[in-house]
Structures are given as structure tokens and as C-alpha cells.
Image (tube, rainbow, N blue to C red; front, side, top):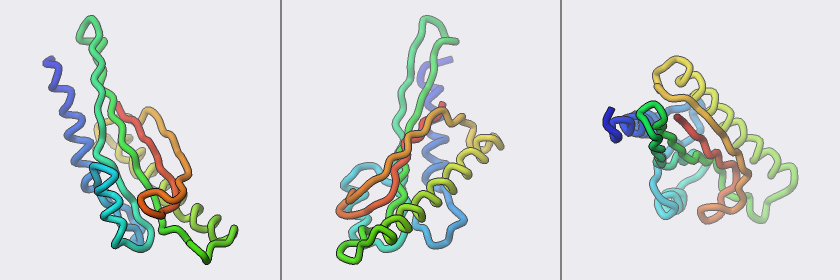
Length: 148
């Protein structure tokens, strides 16, 4: 197999992420490439926002064709605008809980699509991080998700 043929998986993942939809009607999903894209997109946004970063790819070459592997990673943000002066511990907890519920919904969809073979990839790792005041004042969670 030619070395770059395995990168077809990257194209499949990009197409999937660009068109992913969530059942939560009150969530806006956007596909972004860089931090500047995300910041300018969020400047005019309101409500719960999901940002999906264009995936990165690493191809490892071993001594023979069976030792080669392709690993891909994307970052997904589930965010709401900072509460500002009206922030209380209870409101902040509710905000992070809403964002975490959306993260859970995204993971459910990814695992279901991976299991049904419509994604054609396996999820191999997840890093979940709380985020405070990112992209000009947004709070929530980021998920680094790895595929192979």
C-alpha cells in the first residue's frame, strides 16, 4: 500500500466532522481551523457553542507495511459566554454542567458512529479539560479526541 493512501482516513474524518449534527437544537456547531477563526466566530455568537477543530494527522512508518499506523486527533470545545459580573458559584456550576452534557452527547455520537462503521475509525484516547475565558471570554470544556 502506498504511504499516503492511509491518509484517506483523514479525509473521511474531516468530512464527518464538518457535517456532524447534534440532537440538541440549542447548540451551534462550527468547524474551525485556527484560534483566530474561533475567536472571530464567537465574537458575534450567543448561547452554547460547539467548535470542532480541523483534525491533525500523524503517520508512523515501521520497518514493514504491517508496522505502519495513522493516528488522528481533533479538539472539540463546548462553550458558553462567561457569566461576567452576574457570576455566582451556582450559575457557574450550571454552566459547566450544560457544557459537559453536550460533551457527553458528542462522545455518544462518535462512539455510536464508530461502532456502526459509518465513521470507519476507532476512538483511541480522550482528554477532557475545563476551560475558563478562552477565545475572548468563553467557559466550558475542551476534548482532545484521538482516532486510528
